[in-house]
Image (cartoon, rainbow, N blue to C red):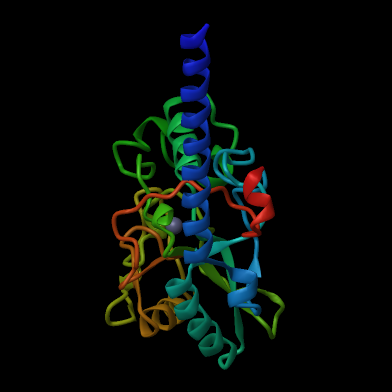
Length: 256
Ligand SMILES: [Zn+2]
């Protein structure tokens, strides 16, 4: 009887410490991150992984609310980008920011299921789903999980539409590379056609450059394969892959 009571006490103590440990991790996350709506109020959010309009075709694990979270440092830099592009007549439109590890795990599970091609026509019509791992469209780790990476485009305040970038967010193909049809470092259009026979116009290339220049000017670096993806050069958590859900950062909701 005594040993049973002792075992109960030990297990209670362990569960209390596990619980407090988890809450401490949540508190640390909540202190390090901010909501983009608070930090960059002019940004427009379209959180695709909260919706079914994404390459998977369903809401992604870990996206509990259509909000965007970023580290304080990344959000501060993005605020400067936002002010910069507003002066040029645009607003930032954000598709994704911090992404929990469980969401990346969901992408990996989806990529392994080659029979599930329900969104192929919209995001990867030219690719066989079987090459997504091999060609690194889907990876087991994402920079987004470190909290200082953002996927975004520009919204034109004059036309009240997204700026025409000649392709959509999360398009799997060489047409999404910043170097497609030009030299992004020099900002020069060169033309050309992808293996699938696609191209972008000088204006679409120039539009990608407006976004890229503004992001780079305020401390972000671009990715070679996606014109919409940028990471803060001086990111504060270079080796930490978080798993806090995407939801408002209120203390009370952390118990959900
Ligand atoms: Zn991205």
